[in-house]
Length: 223
Image 1 (cartoon, rainbow, N blue to C red):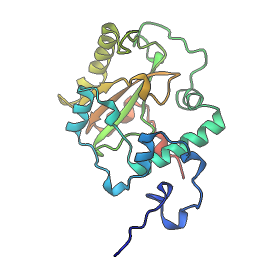
Image 2 (image 1 turned 135 degrees about the vertical axis):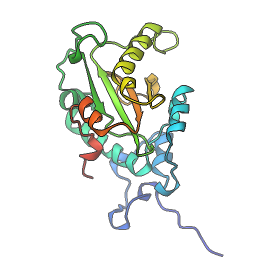
Image 3 (image 1 turned 45 degrees about the vertical axis):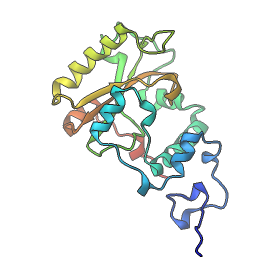
Image 4 (image 1 turned 120 degrees about the vertical axis):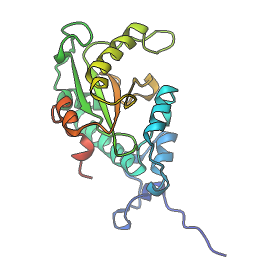
């Protein structure tokens, strides 16, 4: 009878020459979802098509968004090293990505002034069809939520809808733009308000324009 070779989870998706006998610090104490993710071979991960992305957003099943396992590993290492250097990921985002001074104060009403918000690429996007672009809109103003449900108020949702329509939908084919705001439990960065915009097959020049030539950290970070 044969036997199955069981390898430690921190060896999955790692070339044999780079494997370590001990679990790296950045992979210790993972929550169950991340542990399952890191333990999954990339070959077993199913990339999400646009139709499924739209379904997840429409049904508010946001927990179904996951990173490609090897990218999740890189993300965990990045956040571990970045928190060591900056104290928190929020400090890194504020100081290096947004370059906003604390305390954060908006100049005007939501989306009234362009310096009250910034559009950047999601630094560590989910495992999606390569034609899907994932942006994050960071805001100095509050995205007001209902105290009972935790969901956006009707007014806040309408303000975001108006902005997304003007900025993105007006330049994209119908049905090629989705947006969502993570529930508090799914947020990776709590200190700065933000919501997510996903676009299917946008023009690269439009993306460079709207992000002011931004480059996501996943394309900069060297393991």
